[in-house]
Image (cartoon, rainbow, N blue to C red):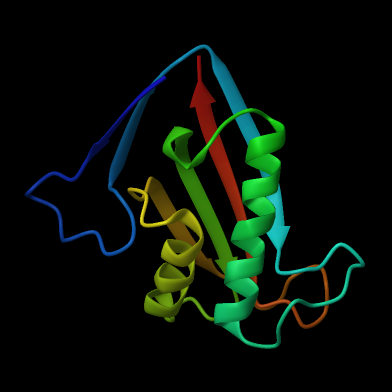
Length: 129
């Protein structure tokens, strides 16, 4: 799979994401939104950083199950009750991905998520093959 990330100089800097992700491949993998939950459905943490780390680890499990990795991800959508805390979110993402280049991304502010106490949900699309 070839993934090209583009940040046109005419656009503002992209802290923690890329403006454009161009993918070539034959297999598209859509991962459902993952919350910061443990396998027993309990909250992994009470804070945004801890929940983001766990949500990203859950995304990583889903990606591996599909046979893809962080470098195959071309799109990431984040739903959070704390949308202006992108620096906290980006730091937690980098901890899990080992600093892999960030794909195209959108952060959406929401008033709540499906599970009470959850602060963030992350979904990804990957392309391989």
